[in-house]
Length: 296
Length: 296
Image 1 (tube, rainbow over the protein chains, first blue to last red):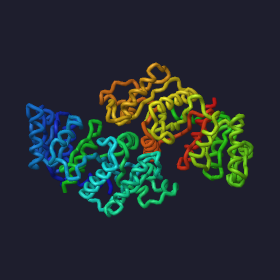
Image 2: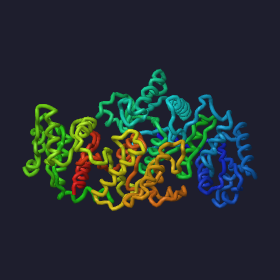
Image 3: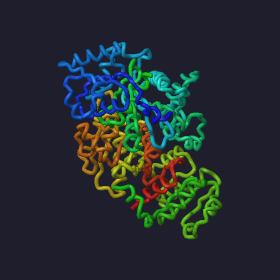
Image 4: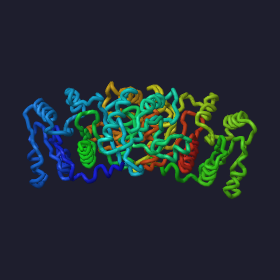
């Protein structure tokens, strides 16, 4: 699947995105762009009244009608009302505003009904990389520090469900290491063998590894190294062994390889947009479009 | 320093590069390019006679005169003669040909006199990244899997000596993690504090960390995150916590960010060029030029 396919034709996408603490110019400007590019409503939860900030953008009445304000005196009430609205589906997407990721995650984890039956949260980043021939999903670049083998199996379960939701009929998933042959000296390479075995009977996914990054994303380099794999160089998703790997890769792709990205938290009963302050407005908007697409 | 400065004006560089097992078209083509771009001699050690292969390139007599052949029947003799020539400085640079990195490393480690007094080997990759304002060295992307704190201190010692050799008068060194504030949950972030403290009295290097990759290479992102650091966004060298991080970063930069690279093994008493088969001819030649420059 192409990244561009996912984020185009977004006009008909609808839903109600709840934004926690939208008292920030960058967030409001992303919210307005989301309203322009989709047919969604947005509910802003917070303590500061964002009315003046919104009016400073001089937007049409039609867009204003799709913004709903929930302003309270206490942080506790903000979260309380947001949780209630998520429970009765008044809002069906959650978006992080001007607040730390840790605080949003702690809010989610406090509510059992917000976690799906796989009982595991992971972050997924969907990249459009100029030199790669299709969308590449990478996990985990933001949340799980040193996921166990079982954690990485659950990550793949989450990615399977997410991918089905957005229209994939099959997924090639690679397990990243620094070598392409398992060696006991490099734990990620050994783990890859065990993880891939777990999915040997799964027809939706083809999970293989270990791959070094070049063999994961370039078929020619895999052929040169004599790697026998149907999916080498043609991955839809890449599982990294540690956050240090994923986080560095995410940032090298966005800063130096001019990649576009849309990212979400998976494993929740509603999509969660957890972009960071450093993400561009375009990345925030694309993440929202991706979230709305999972509702279809 | 700029990468381009290092690899330009190479005509006057001289030395004698010993290539182990040069029986390969790509290696010979790199050797000929090295002869063209520098004033060096090259000695080819191997079992197969490469004369025909060399003649197929149709090169001038002047270049042929600077190629010396050491062909033996047994692998043992090849290594024996190469070691003797390194010991009496007949050759003063070692280059890997058509042989595994592990075999070359084992050859080096067998000879105590080949290891310098720091007693630690590491790989250094020197990048020219199109969107970065100067050369960025990264270690370790190829050799050390999970270096201890002490290992990473020795890596920095090796990088200091190497950088002085090629003309640096000061180095900004960053310690990579996935966060910019130390947290006990992420070992690389805690290690960074201890490693940087070790260099607090060193005037040649300014070692700081932890950095997430964006704060390491982009001053604006560091300012946005309120990071107080003189070197954030202005690094000359980056130390990664694991090989999985460095190897992935190396490949994402060369495959997706169109980076040029020159790489060497440090910690030996002579420079060692250990490029991989997947490296381009240009990267091999640049690595040789870098090696010759350390002899000045």
